[in-house]
Amino acid sequence: MNELLLEIKNKVSAALKENNYNDDVVINFCNKLELGEFQYNGMMKLSKIYGEVPRDMAQKVVNVLSKDKFFSKVEVAGPGFINIVVNNDEIIKFINKSINDVKLLVPKINPCKIIIDYGGANAAKALHVGHMRSANIGEGLNRLARIFGNEVISDVHLGDLGRQSGMLISEIKKRNPELCFFDKDYKGEYPKIDITSKMLGEYYSIASMSAKEDEKRMEEVREITSLVESGYPPYLNLWKQIVEVSSRDIKNTYLLLNTKFDLWEGEMDSIKYTDKVLEYVKDYMYPSEGAMVVDVKEEGDKLDIPPMIIINRNGATNYETRELGTLYSRMERFNPDEIWYVVDNRQSLHFIQSFRVARKCGIVNDNTKLLHLGFGTINGKDGKPFKTRDGGVMQLNDLIAMIRNEITKKVSDRVTDDLKEDTISKLTIATLKYADLVSFRSTDYIFDVEKFSSFEGKTGPYVLYTEVRIKSLLDKNNLDKYNIEIITDKELPIYLKLLEVSNVLYKSYEEKSLNYICDYLYELCSLYNKFYGECNITNETDIKLKNSWLSLSKYVYDVNKFLLDILAIDIPSRM
Ligand code: ARG
Image 1 (spheres, rainbow, N blue to C red):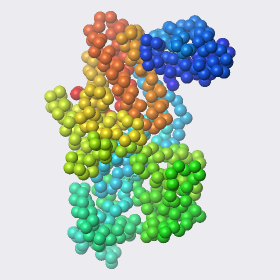
Image 2 (cartoon, rainbow, N blue to C red):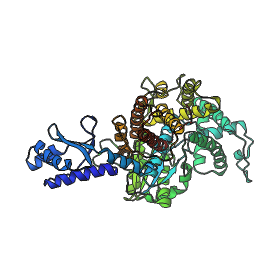
Image 3 (spheres, helix red, strand yellow):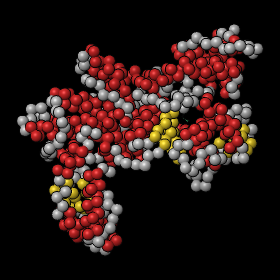
Image 4 (cartoon, helix red, strand yellow):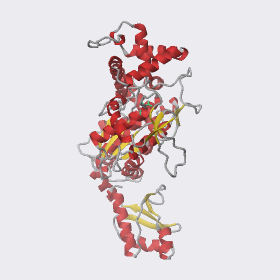
């Protein structure tokens, strides 16, 4: 809540007290401006406690509030609502206070130390659209959490162990069996291999195709995979080189999405903690169908939560074991207050199991909160998981290319050549990110390329268009000092919307979903564009009014920019 809302709340509470009523007052924004700007509707509830008629009670409170110059109108409505209009001077005071620093709008909380695990791309494999969701949501939540003053450590948690290691090494072996990595008796240093990420892609698809058809080849892939995981030096060395090549690519893709990580760690880094994990779980682990498992069922579970497999039937550890190793290492090295996992909803069982084992066995203590922030699936127009035109899995690159294509068509004759590339890239990423963040985090949504890249409606380009337009207005009408002096009815709705920023930030942070910020951006831009269309700001002759309008425009620009920065969306200079 911002100071202005807090002041309304305090004044209403005091007026209630004067009449011997008591309530934890909630002030709502009125959605119909003709009724009022704000509303208190606690009277119906209070009337049950005090046994009086709500309208009469409301009138008594209104009588007190009406004497206060802070309000320009307070009245009783309907069965006992109190509708409130704040004096414009109070709004002016409030806005002017933060006119040069909209960061002041961020509500105060008790900050803490948070690790956020997002990204989760897999080495030597292309990023798919699910990885993009993790990056977009994770980066947004990271920035949001920092704005609230938390200490945040982000970790990409690269999927750098798995079947792909076996696939690639078996393909390299087939092509170059003479390499020292395949000579059991080789004792020397391992050489640098010459491999590009393009080759990795080709090798991977060839190997996986032949492993599908040839059981012997598949057996070899499995064997190599488990040798890599158990740390067999030549394969581990070879694999690490492959991971390095692929990581460079993955990093660039994340950069394209304005996404960066403090830690570039992966599942492989957790292997060194496997013994520690086994020490913690040994008293809880028992054999089951050849594997070693830990029970995690709890009373009150609505679903059947099966035991978590710590050691596979073949003696190897797995994704779960590595999750626990990573958790152990995070607790040891950082002792965070919270760990957030921004990972697909479809992994929810994995996280329920891992969190329960970690707590039960003491890897994580009660002071650390573990949250799986799941997200939904991206579907195509047919409502089924998004596929490419030829029916293949939608890779992130395919999606970016589709959007870029659409945006290029639109921008072509609007922007001069020197700026075209910058505008197209920024609009492409804005389209992608806004579309990906505008629905509540955990819901599935349909990716409609045409709709999301439109310059009209609830889209990234629409918000950016508003920003570019305001910027050009401000450049044309240079002001030395921004200060609001007057508010007229025309722009009042914009001011009232601006009073909501703190609540929107808080709600997004509380629910860990950026859709509230996206909605708000759209609403603020719509109100601003309506005002812009109706009022000729540049030609306004009343200088006080003109300057107030320009100051308001700059405030709207700054608030939008502040929120776009949280979403990691950049603003082009022209569009
Ligand atoms: N690499 C995994 C995948 O592609 C995601 C990793 C998510 N993070 C985690 N701590 N498990 O499915």
